[in-house]
Image (cartoon, rainbow, N blue to C red; front, side, top):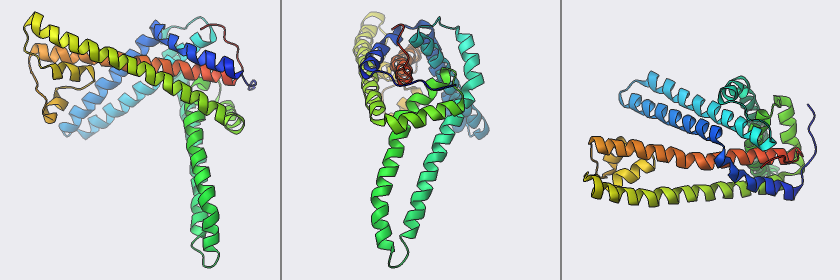
Length: 307
């Protein structure tokens, strides 16, 4: 598969700003909510297994949580890629099956990128080892310092601004491992600064959506906690409801010294708050996943057919 040319910077920015519409994609939202909820439940089970000194179960449950998060995020990304391309959206089951079939491609791309970084670090280590030589050692070290700083810094930038944001969308769009690696190398070599700036804009958008979600959770949580005491007459510490809204449970509240009401209403507050917490982190996640799809389409020069 050939790699098309570049996209227009202004069109790329417009496409990126339109990524906030991802919060209206029902199937993608439900998929990501289910992914986060299931992964969180498995992590909680792993924590309980650790406390029960059942290390084997803890490892299995932890691995299962990672697998659910990985494949669920890939399935959500495929649904959002369909939206970004203006295609008829596939069913969630089809997206999950496709994620299971192609997820290994993304892992191979990430492995290749990490091996490239390891190779750079190996060359740097060899140069620093040569700096131990008498007479020429100081001169070698003087040259290796700027080279090492620039090389390592560029590697980190490429991983954060090119590999991380573009590898997933390329796989979701059907590219194979070799074509994806060619795309990443081409982008890192020719338009690294442009891509880094676009990723920075996407990060700011995601953070803004997260801040708005946090504002809604905090303001609504304080109002509901006050009304719960007045209307239902339940003695529920406000800290307990607010902790549930931010993903904490009874096990984490006790050691922290926070007041805990181990009553049916208290447990229900944590469960309901946990549902709000999952929704609050899913919305920024949707915007980010749709944003990297938009960035990918801008990179390969596709015209936007829908918002």
